[in-house]
Length: 232
Image (cartoon, rainbow, N blue to C red):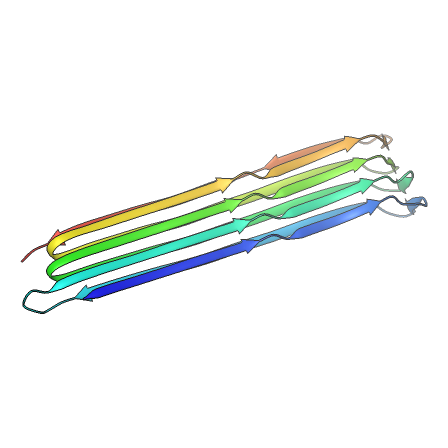
């Protein structure tokens, strides 16, 4: 007897989130307060993939073949931007803030089981998973004249990508024969987080002009496999 099972899963998020003041033809003024731009994104993928194949033969000379495989791919590639650009006059009686922040979470669980039982048997299991976060997070002011009369001018960009994976494969042959199991897990975080000022004037009397970019990335992969043969 022959038993084959296969599962394939592909999940992706590619959003674009922007908050901006661009090429303002007339002066912008907050007479009684702050001017604030905030672009924020929270993206999450949770994926579970499972495949099982069982082959059992009871003929006098029974042959059992079993194969199971799982392939899973997860991609998060967002663009999060907050900026002021090409605006000749922007004034706030309070503070001016430009903030871009991004949280990306990718959680994948992959399990494969293959069992063959008979006089002659072969069991094969394979699990493959690839997960990537490549977000671009940007906050900036360029080509603009900005005044905060009663507070700070702040430009801030933050990114928090996280990938957690669990990959497991098991192959068992209860027969004269063999069992083979293989698992592969690839995790990649390669985004860009930036904050900057360029080509303008920035005035905050008695206060501060601050620029900051921070990224905190975490990867937690777990990969396991086992194969065994038993003849009775």
